[in-house]
Length: 77
Image 1 (cartoon, rainbow, N blue to C red):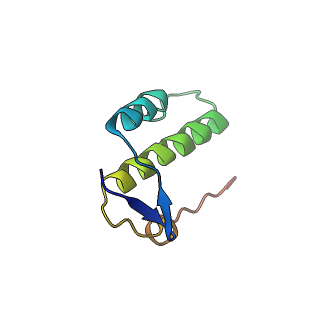
Image 2 (cartoon, rainbow, N blue to C red):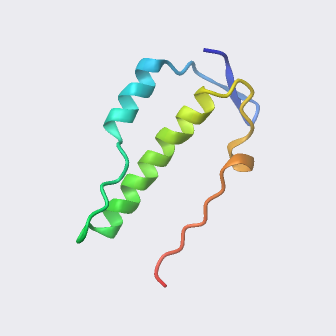
Image 3 (cartoon, rainbow, N blue to C red):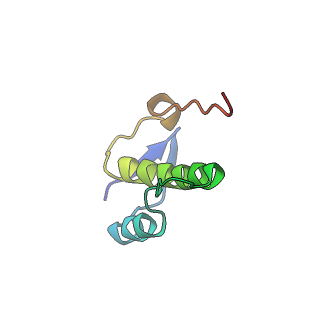
């Protein structure tokens, strides 16, 4: 795989084996009735990191993640 740069810093090589391992370790959240909101938020956060890694591993000239992915998290109503 090619080099990936984030904010001018070179990231280490991301192998298919690594992606497969984190993909299996952090699956998408299992949303079901009665699920704990905090646990779902944690699972969604870990999955977002996996998706971020997969995105940047597949992008030769990855842009700065702040410019690509911004999220607004609101607590309560």
